Structure formats: structure tokens, C-alpha cells
Image 1 (cartoon, rainbow, N blue to C red):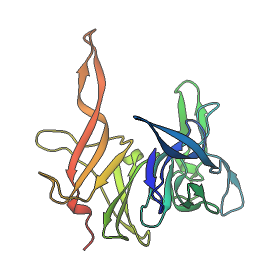
Image 2: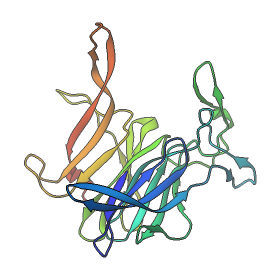
Image 3: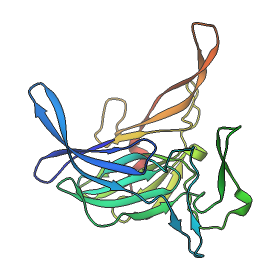
Image 4: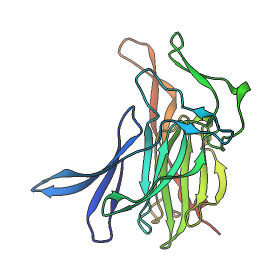
Length: 250
């Protein structure tokens, strides 16, 4: 989910729908001491694609599921929404008055875009045939997950995209969407890094201990594992805090 405020001061939320390629826009409404919502618009991203060679391709998913959207973020200066469709890629579409404007455009596809894959019931996952890769994909390793924007002035800054499949993050120029680079949150002396990241958020405001602003990333495979009541080790998740100054454009 991503929240934003329109030019008239109205607050909205963009919410993805599990197991579908749908995104809804909702107006946030104050009702006494609580906040409610009103549906405004909805958008369905494509589920099937025509590749450059003319062939058709659909991303693999669990039975009954579709290529869902994970992370969302809206640029407060331009009103452009960025949507992370997990197995497909990164999209952009303007939002005005809580309504989607025109057709969504692809910023970059995943590496797996166009690659044949099939659901394996025994493994309970999609098996990708990398040997049959037609070469139409981009850099991001599926799934595309968390999105966040480090603002630098009104229009400059950095769009950060979680590339969950290779435990890294890709960055883009906020103004032009030109690819800038790639980074990983690696193990430190006292804590581990971030793997299988589902989400990220950043502020550029200097904070105590974080003079360049604060970048928070989810770590889906924190170590060590925790021990449950039964004495068994269980996967552990948490969040990692980083000074966001390294995202500043020179």
C-alpha cells in the first residue's frame, strides 16, 4: 500500500489486491477519531503479454493466482504512481484526483519476462526454464517488491526498487527514470544484511544517527533464526536501518 496527498490536500491510498494484478485507489476520510475510506478508482495491469517476436507469454503463478502487484509509491511532486508487478516488472501511471490517467507504461521488465515457466505441484512453486530465455527481460530479478523515493528538492532524487530475486536494490533517477545503479544491504559486524526484501521506505530529512536521512528495508531472512516454544528453529524477519545519504545524487 502507498499513501499520498493530491494537490488539493485530499489524502489517498493505493492498495494492491492479493493474487490479482489489480490496484485500487481509495480516498481517506476522517470520521471522528478514526480514518475510513471511499473507493475512487481501480486499475488492472495486464496478465498476458505479446513479446517482441510476436509470441504470447503469461507469467507463471500458483493455481488460481494472477501476477499480483506488490509495492506501490506515488511521487508527491508529479503525481506519478509506480507499481511493482512481482513477476513482470516496474510500471508507471499518473494519478489525478485519485483516478488513474491513461494506460500504464513499463519502466523496466524483470529478467524473467518472457521466459517459459510452469507450476510444479511437488515443489509447490514455478520452475523457470532459463535455458529457453528469449532475451526480452530487464535487470530486476523477480519478484519486484518494495518501492520508495528519496526526495532531493522538489523534483530530483532517487527511486529505489527491491529486486527480491537477487537480494539487491536498483536505483533510478527520479526525474528521468534513467538507471543509476544497484546496491545490496550486506552483513555488518553485529547484524546481518537484507535478503528477500518485501518492502522499503526512505525519508531524506536528517535524523539523529542518520544525517543523510533514513532508509528502512525489510529483511525476510534475518539471522539467526528464532527458537519456537517447541525448541525448533524458525525463520526470523526484521528491518534494517541505513543512513540514506549514499542515495544522494551528486
